[in-house]
Each structure stands twice: as C-alpha cells, then as structure tokens.
Image (cartoon, rainbow, N blue to C red; front, top):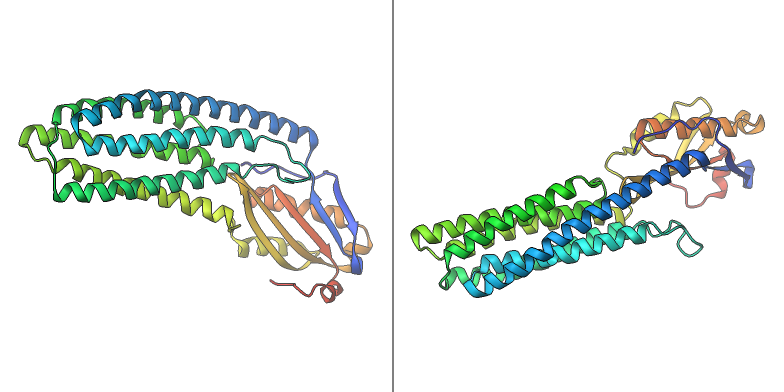
Length: 335
C-alpha cells in the first residue's frame, strides 16, 4: 500500500482530562472514495480469477477420481483429496471476498474485512488435515504396496500438470498480497508439484515395476502440503493474534515520532494488521504545553501521520496527544 501525504486533512479532536487531545486521521474523502473504487475493481478481478481457477479444478477433479479408483493409485487419490480441498479453499476465498466488501456497521465497526484472514486460516487447516490423512495411508502402502498401473498415473498427472499450470497462471494475476488469495494460490501450486511427482512415480512404475514409487510420491506431496499449511497458519495466526506487522519496527517508529520537536515521549504504542495490506497503529504522544496551549495540535497530527504514511506505509493511525501531567490519570500506561 502506497503512503499518501496528509497535510491539510481535517482531524477530529476532543479535549480530555488534563488538557489532552485525541486525533484520528479521517482521510481525504475524495481520495478515499477513489481508492475504494479502485479496490472494488481489484476485488472483482480477483473474484473472476478465482472463479476461473475453481472451474478448472472441479472439471479435472471429477476425471481424476474416476481414474484413481479404476487404477488403484494412492498418489492420484492423494492429489484428488488435495484438489477437493482446493475446491473448498477457492470457493471459501470467493465467499470471503464478498464478506470483506460489506460496509462497516455498528456491530462490525471495521466491516468483515478479516473474513479473508479467516479463509486463509481455514485453507491452512484443510491442507494440514489432507496432509495427515495422506501421510497415514502412504506409510501403510509403503509397507504393503498394492499393485499400481503406471500408464494411468502418467496420463492423469500430465493433464493435472497442465490444468494446474493454467490455474496457477490465472491466480498469479490476482492480488497475491491478499493472504486469502495467496492461500488459494498455495493450494494450486502444491497440487502442481504433486502432479509432477506423480508423473515421475508413474514412469518409475512403468519402467521398473517398483510399486513403492507411488506412496513415495505421496509422501513428497505430504511434505509440500504441510509446508504450505504451516506458512498459511503462521501468517493468518499472526494477524488474528494482533501481531505487529513484519514491515513495522516499533523502535524505528518511536524514533521517528520523537524527531518532532513538540513530542516529549511516546507510550502505549501498538501496531497490528486489520487485514492483508491494511496495517494500523495507535499511540499516546506526550507533547509540549506550548503545542497544546497555542493550538498546534492539528499541525502535529498531520506531521505524525505524514511520517507514518511515508516511512512505514501505515495510513490508518490514531494518536492521543496529551500533556505530561496526564500520565497521573492513566494507571495502565506502558511503553
């Protein structure tokens, strides 16, 4: 998200105990409307890309299940199970995009923007479940390998590679900085790698008759699935637990805010992520009495928010400006 200059914005301010003031960036209404329009276009495009990928995966899934049952291939069943999870993941991503577009309300003051993060977390859980199920069956078949037909493996795997390459290419056009879209993309990318492994296993079975190549290929798929699952769960969990955005160094933020001559100290500094690409920050900023008494609060707010937007790409910020004596009224104060 690109930082924007904020000078001249109208800020809501109120007097509080001890002469403190609270200020929040309300944004330029014209610019916000324009940005919202562009975001709407981006979401619609993402929804179309996800819908195309969903159609490709569903069509291929039906074919793969039929061939997997007929050939007795665990690798194909593993991929089919993962692709079934893909179907749910992509459908859930589309639904989450719709929810995230709902406007804010009294009950949901930020709207339902975090639906995208929840969808990413669900994607991570489904990948984990599929991975563990396939792992159990792969170990069983590695010990007692059943007979596997290599030709169906290779044919279906090659088609699967083609389908997933197209689906991945389509989703690569979407906004992958959205954790929701990235979750769907990781499902498809993992399938692509899995089909490559399946094709190799099929070739080994045809040329050598070594049936254990099939469950070994399944174990490779499991490793890829668990890796993607961990990445999604870690990223979505960080957002849901209000972790500090990776791009925001609080010590660096504090140092920049202290550079303003009117600022005496900064405390209760918090940064979190509302949803993908939407970091937020709040802080209590102690300013000089001269600033408070001579009406310099508006200018300080502009400079504080200009600093955050340009140095840290944080445009949603809230500051409470207060006098040094206000600390006596804040028992829960922390650095």
